[in-house]
Amino acid sequence: MKKSLIASGVAAAFALVAHSNTAFADIVVKIGHVAPLTGGLAHQGKDCENGARLAVEEINEKGLVIGGQKVTLQLDGQDDAGDPRTATQVAQRLADEKVVAVVGHETSGTSIPASKIYSDAGIVQISPAATNPTYTLQGFKTTYRVVATDAQQGPALANYAAKNLNVKTVAVVDDSTAYGQGLANEFEKTAKALGIKVVSHDATNDKAVDFRAILTKIKGENPDAIMYGGMDATGGPFAKQARQLGLRAKVLAGDGLCTSSIAALAGQAADNIVCSQAGKGVDQMAEGKVFEAKYQKRFGQPVTLYAPYTYDAVYIIVDAMKRAQSTDAAKIVAAMPATDYKGIIGDTSFDAKGDLKHGVVSLYGYKDGKKTFIDAVKM
Image 1 (tube, rainbow, N blue to C red):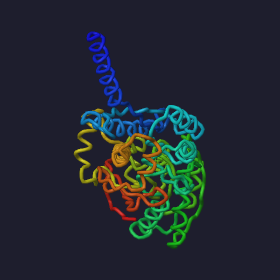
Image 2 (tube, one colour; image 1 turned 60 degrees about the vertical axis):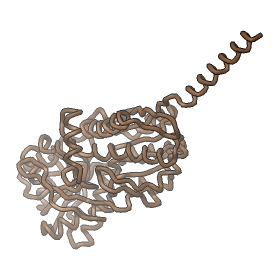
Image 3 (tube, rainbow, N blue to C red; image 1 turned 180 degrees about the horizontal axis):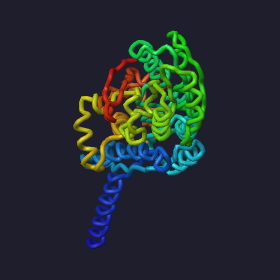
Image 4 (cartoon, rainbow, N blue to C red; image 1 turned 180 degrees about the vertical axis):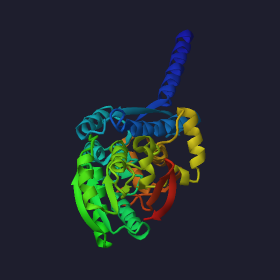
């Protein structure tokens, strides 16, 4: 009888320990990341993914405890190839895989259609780079961005053109994407209001490689500047071909062109580009040099553009987890509006739409192919 009681006690003790270990076992929490990892924008997409991966690795190394449980983060990286249709397929895949939040997508054209899927699934989405105003005007409680919008970036670029470059006439070209078209339209609106004459507005596409027909027409119009709404993969060759055709006009562009890669893509024509960035450049961030050194050491290459933004986006998601004391997607959504996070990119807090309360637009030029800071405009 005594042996039976002892055996029962030991069994109960083991059961209690087993239950305790199960209750406090490590849990793996997936955070999604989506960007173009193939195609013409792969260099920008990989830069974004690297930033997010660096944050995940750091957090895991330090140790993360949420609600009394040790949490290991796992980055679920996906490729949308910069294609809107692929973006929705990837978004649905991440929703089915029960990620707790998503960092991405990079472009406006992919972020906007994907946002509906994340909203339906109740998953926070933080884009590090989508600037089209429509992205946060859909009424979704899950949609955030950590950059300024084209409604801020376009006017900042137009104001600089009018007041600092003394531009009187401009030709506008966009790549027909949600990003390029949106930015070009916002620029054009402000340019006209400032008295700049828009001599033409042409459309190309985000796969184009030959711009000579459009540029020959623009050469005949003889504008002071050309505003190009698009990414560096096409904007670089656009600027290069403009120079080859002897156009004297400055090339004005947004953040899609404002990369460290543009010199290789545009050659000597890079020095004719003035571009805006929908946030601070890494060279203007208080901890930018420290971040760049860590990034270079880990990945063996310099920051291209938005790695600091994806890095902070991961930390912002973890900050929401900590405040909610939960890794539940719905509770992360509920915690996001109260975000007040100080990170590499600066202070991040959001308005009711999910936009930054204190956005910054930076202006850059290129000298001997090197990206050079001009000015910062607080929004």
